[in-house]
Length: 347
Image (tube, rainbow, N blue to C red; front, side):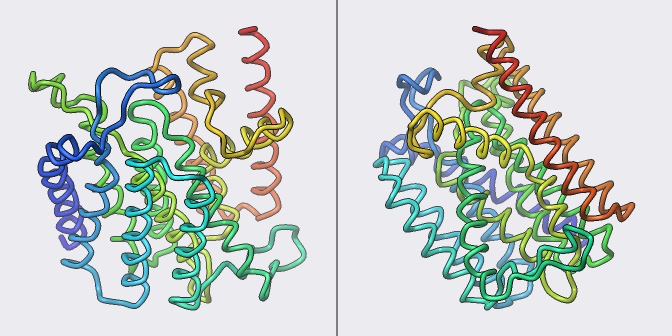
């Protein structure tokens, strides 16, 4: 009953936040305008991330134990949403965003004294421990995951669907391990995202004949999601009471990671900045290949779900770390080959 109450309250708070901030965003100009890269119609409020964060904040303060870890997470998240909202409004330089992400990473690493120090038995010769290098690895991991989820946000429903998939998968991993003390965290995040997804996909317009009330996640939301994902994965994979193995984390957020890594490599080969926006993400490629926006959403979401199921199965059946790692690398190679094939067919 406790779990149901926490999830229901997160949904309720998110819905209220959207209703309240929708007109406010329009009034202050916190909207996404059509451009060369953005082909939507009209000015869309960028309040999805703000509403999710406020719902998570309210539900956490209401239901969860007041621990140092939770306080540091909420403070770091508030800073991330603030920087993201500034970026949504004023289009901050990449350097400013990265500096902000490093400061927030420092708060999470040193605020609770925790970082990624154990990568598991990746090569079959015992656990790979990083020692002090784990701090550097954690900085890189936080920045990579934050920007992976930020970059994947490109069509209606995608970041919302992928977020819910990731948070739900982490919740299932906590259940598989039998360590349900942290189960409320990913469930609150997942249910707080549902109202955003409903508005983003036009649920109320379609089924209740309401006028268009579409909202976008915004950088505030996508970066907050990425921060929440890496926080949960770190909490779940590190320490003596780890709930699941680090290699499983690769499968849980496979699509955002693969998309980011592939596009960074392509941009580097073409002499472009890894952070320079373009229209060569997975969703753009699938749309140029002939899929509609909704078909692209279904295809990518299905792929992400299948990846997560592989990770969940690997943890449940205790498939060895080397097998799971090699499988992920093989999947990434196949992913790149498929993208190249689709691109060549189109040209």
